[in-house]
Length: 111
Image (cartoon, rainbow, N blue to C red; front, top):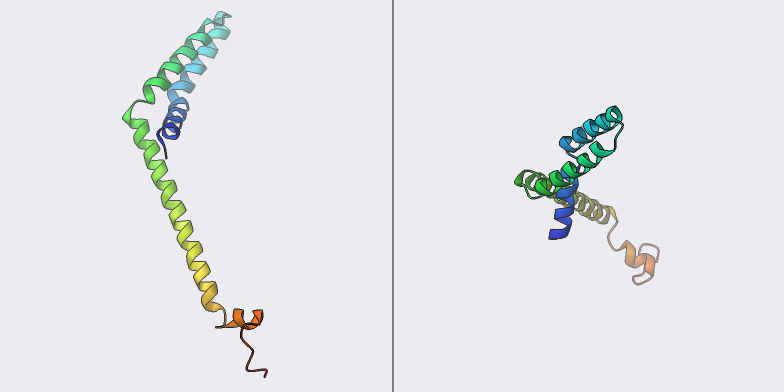
């Protein structure tokens, strides 16, 4: 994973944090109560600052790196399971059957 993808994931994790949702809920409530759009503008600024500061924190970086590690492990487990199934299928097949079916080896039992 390159640095750009990692930063995007960290920023997304920071943007989906409870602080951002709480600020938007408070801003929406204040905008309705005050009948003014300025609380929503303030919430946008708070959210932007939170994402920028949060994306540089080690808390979100460590959480994203842990998720990436788990995804890699899951892909490795799936690849090992596929390899086990492929080898099992090859071992279940009778020996030399492929050569007999392709005509490269005559079927001596029938001859």
